[in-house]
Length: 425
Image (tube, rainbow, N blue to C red; front, side):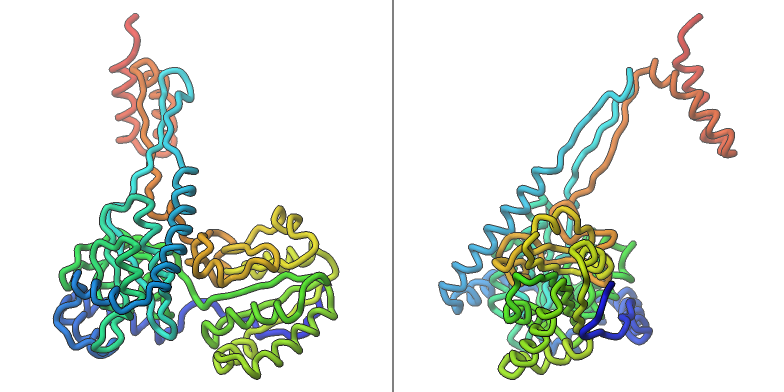
């Protein structure tokens, strides 16, 4: 049985018609007028007045020179972990060929996507770590050409730490361009960019809707909406720590849900008190407070299994578990983007430097997909080869199925092989 100490309104998924129409109009404009439209939107939306969007090696060097060594060392550590985990993921994938029966051999090949466009957002917060998650993972997959875009901050161009991160993560070309116009330019091949085969990376609702509309013209990684956190906690958890982690994700934006599921009602009430107390001094309280007020939820359940069932219904992007039975939860939870076990781990670790990818499914998409990983940049393709004897054995079966379906030209291709490879009498 579930009891709510705080319940949020039912969430509405999908994009507003206003955003959908605006993005559709922009894409049509860019598809028709290309560079002219891209430059116009860059001036209007990014405050970019230059004619050249591509960042030069000299500009990258200048950005690197102004950054403290401590940042470069921290970045290198985060980059090492993310790329090492991506490499282990790549190793878990394998090519193979198998003879499933005499004369019929089937195989699987892994082919990296030829060109990818990686978007690194720079709205409310310039997500420096997003460069690693996107660009470095694509490089670890073996992508041949990585184009990277990030919004210019007015006339000053890309935020220097973000630019440094994009370069160090392995982007072959970097462009100071944001939002819908950036994704469209990568998909259509505008302002000097080569056309890419897939675009990836998070962003605001306009970026997400743009990816949705571009799907088919190019591939996409996934559609990411407002970030989410769910915490499952019991009597062993500390209320102040749970509250801090909920608010830590709520600061992303006023529409970022934060959910607590607990088997201990007293903990739930203590967390509610702690959140109100911490909001008094939280630097981002104006954002996190609105998110908690409108989208925060505290649910009390009677058992661990009920907590698991409730969490799987949320299918959260980020899921923290702070209980006496963390292993039990690890074995049984099914729907989440990334799982953080024990109070020693926190979502911020996954967002920045622990090594797993922070581009994750939201809006209950974790029911059917995981997050960005090295395999997203690799095509798994198949092949077949048969001996003449095996072809003659298979052809009559295929011929009969084709005839049943009414696909007579297909049937002929099989019948030809019956005659061609039939053993002589």
